[in-house]
Image (cartoon, rainbow, N blue to C red; front, side):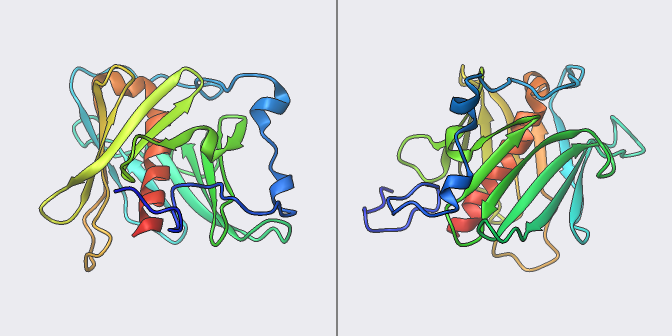
Amino acid sequence: MILPESASDPFIDQVDRPPSPTDTLLPDYVTEANIPPPNLPPNYALTQRPIRPRIYTFSSWNHDSMFLLPPNDVDRTLTPVYNISVALNLNPFVPLSYVTTIRRGIDEDGEFVGEFELAVMQSRAIVKLGDHSTRMSNVLKKDGYSPRKFLWQCGDVEIRWDCRTTLDDGSPMCICSDGRSNQIASFVPPPLDASPPLPAATLTIFPDGHELFDHILLSALVVERKITLSF
């Protein structure tokens, strides 16, 4: 569906309007630093490539965080692979926004992987991977005309998300593919309008996708938030 020019498009974080003081607070870090974004965060620990896809499960939301848990047949202790937390940014000099942060392991002291920030009522959007920060529009774009297809480009990493499929229970299914159109992951969040208790969200990582786990997880959460904003 092609939106008319007058319609609001939640997937575009830049609109034609006079510059505001908050706009000047967010330079294009890639241009100013004159360095390309890193392909992987510092100390990126490559997960050993499995021989078959693995289904990771998001734990229930607990106050301000959740975990991404490994399959039971891989780790019977279900030690979290990632810790995902959300905080409100109340900085008086920028628009009110939510910051989603991803760290490795079970707590907030784990190794920082990445984060993204989306303003509540403004177009300000930032993504950070490792020690590299940039505008979200520099790494995430709509892929074609569909509002449910996305292109994630960060350094040499290029992956695509196609979220046009809906399962029988109303859950969206997002298929992730690499630059050669090979499927490397799938993400199934709970349906947005379902009554609680909601089914657990799952992230299936294919063998070739494990070396891009950080990118897949971060981009999946960004895409889900974008879709939620358009609901």
